[in-house]
Length: 232
Image 1: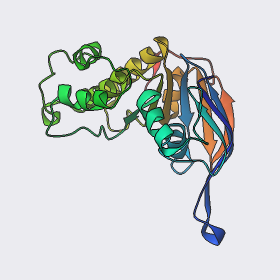
Image 2: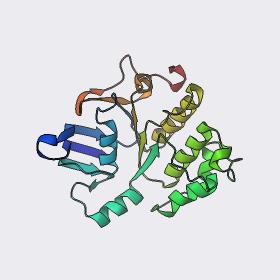
Image 3: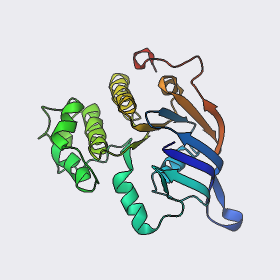
């Protein structure tokens, strides 16, 4: 398993104002696995993703990603972990408006351990003719593809996606999901956080959260569907 969480609990605050965002979570993800983490707002989805990506720390439990126990890692070890093990795709794109598509991807590459060439990755996501375009010159789907290219260019084995289709129209969202699924086919472990149950139909596994607890973990109901079969 490339992602292993055992008895992970996350609390914010102390004493009577303490809030438990995650409670005794166990999660195991293998390379080449496409996992959808499903749940409503406030269920702990983003907290879970941030703990896996070492953007947040667990209050209790063990977190191992890519063979590294990040629950015990030092600050310097966590910095190296983020460079070489995980990449993020966010709902809001987080592109630099004054940088071209190529430069935005290059920015991510500069911090990576074993990166791919930005131009090659942008071509792979269908943006060969948009390398010199600024974000405001791109559609929402194209901006999200730049964000995905930036994550892929790091060449890290775990791809974490927080509502990657949330700001996109249906047709563009389907294109993005197809692109993400291809990353799992190529060997990455891909985790997609969403509140959209329809997206869970294309997953290898669906992990459902409610009030910080894992309430189900298994294959999609009715069996796995092709991306082209989804609709919302």
